[in-house]
Image (cartoon, rainbow, N blue to C red; front, top):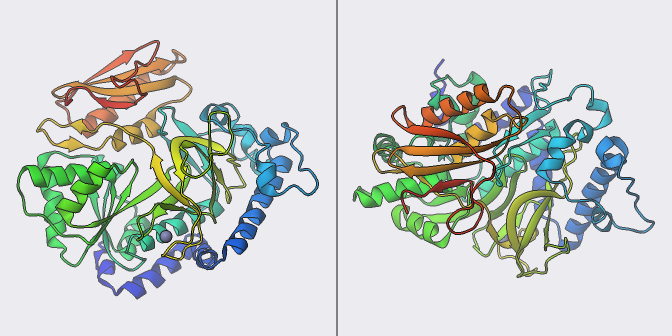
Length: 472
Ligand SMILES: [Zn+2]
């Protein structure tokens, strides 16, 4: 059934239908969206109080209902605020999530969510989420319906901050596995996409043919002036347009996602698309965490949904201006408490000050996250590394492989290095990974699967998971 006509309905009508359909599938995103509006109007004191309440609720639930937290025997001292109590909690690493997956789940759902393979009975309920992770160690977590709704609501806020609130149409340069595997998207997903006014472009393939096609798509939709994109995929497209001296399409704004927005990348995007660039920070396991506003002086943390800490090596809080490790607490994911989760990225707090955009949420001055190399395709264009992370996140069996690295070593030659944990089933898992990579990189690509005892550091000495030694 063709549902493309929905995208041509007026924006406000599409917005109403979007919330209606979400409700139809069991999502309560509309009420979260309303709450999110209220939070945006809070004073600093009101915000602090609201955070205190959410955090308190989460910490009580975790210490009383999650076996993992219960056995830690943490108790809140009289008069201690939730934010002080939080400091008693240990940092939650990927390793701990992997080891204690079942114990993290709260008591009422422990029989239902027993392993990363568990599936909910209801259509819209908790969901097991697999991610490649920012540190090369794949992670599996659970999001409950409440958190999923908050995640969707914060995505709408990101769009609003980036100049295209719900109802305004946009391009989405993203990795679509369905497209790659030539599967048809489900009807409800297609309807939602059209109601959002989204025009998708697949970034999992980035050869000249595809990039030309993306450019044509942009040129054929002159009415659309915004783009949501994997930052490196949008840079790949911009580089292609510049290198081949193709006509530069004009956009108003770009939401740059899933990677560190370097000054160099920001400039090439501004130059090619003449667009205002917004850095958006998030991850699959934590949803949207923070986003730049129009004052471009940092990224506002989404306080209604996440509590962010910046700590030094000793675990002590970093003052504004000092770079430290980010710890993320998901405030609305009670079913599977993720408290002080070590996401693997670094950040710096901005000095607290009122922002011209009037959002009360605190700001991260800058972030240092994933810094993968882009890969070079057979015909010389650049390919986002996100799809490698995606396929590793979805296909890699964490019981069998502990760490990995993907490197381009020559023209159309790639090496997947891995540290095995077990032998049983390893071969079939490697086969699955290899065929995913082959689908994305093309049948002519040579992909070597190489077992190693240790992952070699990159030439710069920094640990990196996706490298392009050939194009350096
Ligand atoms: Zn602001």
